[in-house]
Length: 610
Image 1: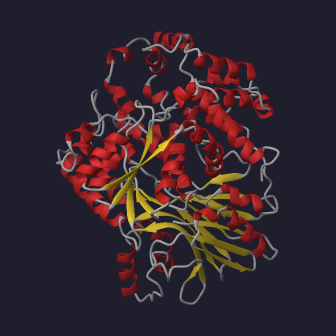
Image 2 (image 1 turned 90 degrees about the vertical axis):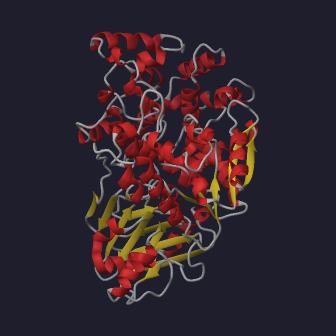
Image 3 (image 1 turned 180 degrees about the vertical axis):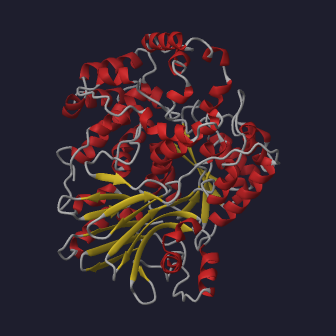
């Protein structure tokens, strides 16, 4: 896992000094070395975190005659099989690194190389003779890639947006339109970003640039195809995950693991049996899973190290977290991941983690929604809308969220499992509310593509394309790379998904439980308490900390800042905070969302921002 950056100029010679500055900005992604290619209009750079072929894998890497140059971030887990196949076809390999299969694979198959790759990747390949740049990103979005076409025609690309700040053609401008979506999603969804002109290359997409024309298109679109035929799904799940874990352990350095109290990381740990694993803990017992993780580690005979986070250091770390994220993120688990990765990075360079299990195997509690209170959905639509509108005005007592959530049919309201602010709330908070892009509009293509499938599968498709890529995997990448640690995610494997996409509804969720097939498979390797433990997410005590000083004071100060006054009605911000402090409403997620945005804004657009 590494960091890449580069640019293609329209006519003039590319500057090696500018590329050096861009790479310096993302040096945390690769402390083991740096390589550059600068020739004519092209500049490609790489920061390396050495995991495979420690001596022979520096980048940029070239094919035999030097006509192709590649910089690559990620891991190709089937590179040995691809190397053998390409060698048999007459290609000569100079290294034992997985990067080289991209060069020879491109020579052999062109873009048809992409579906042959098993792994996580974002790469940029420059054809020196044709003067053409080709970039691609893995189908689930494990590895990020951003691009920007500047006013003078220069094309920038990088693993992190902050690398663009050092290019003289880049104009740093705030994209206010993204703020409305952020307040609904708690992350920055879709292809757009908070920087005008900067785009995310979406998961499963490629980019082709010939110096004049920029083309971006999907090479693979993730979809589900549930089967109705009976099968031993737990047996199949266990077999494919054992294979995936084995593939994800390939490395020339130690591979450790992350372990929480949930079934996902526990299952991966039980299959991988790393020598050691790492856990986050808190002094607040209602949020602390360290005891459960330690018990399981002891049962498996694995060394377990716990990093307990204090409230002070949690809040102090937030500016660094938001800086490393590139865009504001209100997922409090990102801060916990920041500390977890930092603890592991003291001793190892690679860890296995459990991201993706909930999206692939239907693990979120919201997936039980279609099975609960079905009688309510049979009430007249107008009555449900009325009750939902009333619920928005009521205090946060049990049952109110149900009224608001069920005001509209699932197929016209669901755009993610963490839908945050309503349009009414945003209209009240924002100084310039437009409503130009309704949040559901981003999910509508996935609902249209899954017509006729069961509700849980349709929700999964939304979450794979939006929540998984926009929140879960982005924070996993950015928080691990902030500490130069490679994070591998065995659930997010092409062979695992080939099975998961076929799971029928009865193998996923019902009114009582989630991840039915996965839990049954995990039970073969885990104590019953671990395999059956309900979904808790990554619990963080922010709700409670917000009601304490000096943390409430930090939020008040941010709500009184010039940035807050520019974007928000600050009276409404303080009202929202005071409701939470006085326990009239549970507003912690809304308060935290705005606070994280303001902290992020200060990092990139404040007076002292780079």
